[in-house]
Length: 53
Length: 182
Image 1: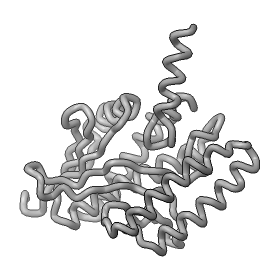
Image 2 (image 1 turned 135 degrees about the horizontal axis):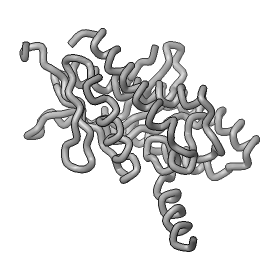
Image 3 (image 1 turned 30 degrees about the horizontal axis):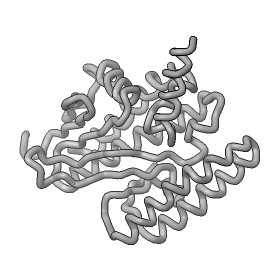
Image 4 (image 1 turned 60 degrees about the vertical axis):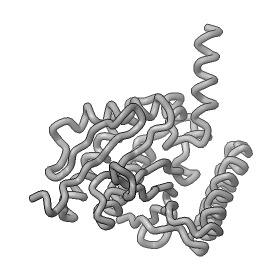
């Protein structure tokens, strides 16, 4: 497996993450384990807000 | 551009120092003092792994030694389905969303470049160890949704020599062609 192929992988992953995460609101990003230290808190908060709405 | 290096006592100290400097600025400007205890848990976790001399914590660094993320990557090469398991990643305070009201384009580029780099470097680590699968764990349903979107988006664009697929509900697999598969 050449380093060129890994560079290609990194490029497609970066482009994919940009597209997918770029379309999310800040509230949605906070629920992702990779981007937040407290995703469970934001997930729970969101569910409670939906229930009281 | 980035390097993925096994955590050492020295790199753990640098991580603490650099990330605490970021936290000082963030807390000063936003009042988000809870971040200090949140990141203290990460620093304690790093210290514990150094004391235990475990080899499953890796730091993603720039060439000049700036730590951008820290990741837990476990060698499961002795399992029935051998793999390297990418269990979690913690981003530096500046890229962490908890304290932010919005993420501008430059910061989103930075975040996505760091994520792509840490996953790719983990795949290279697997290949260097003679392991042809990197399994990436999603803890939350929301993160699992990102993996599903990734599979949908990459589709036929996956580079030659790689396969991307889900295994079970929680794992995204990057499978690499072995040199002896040719």
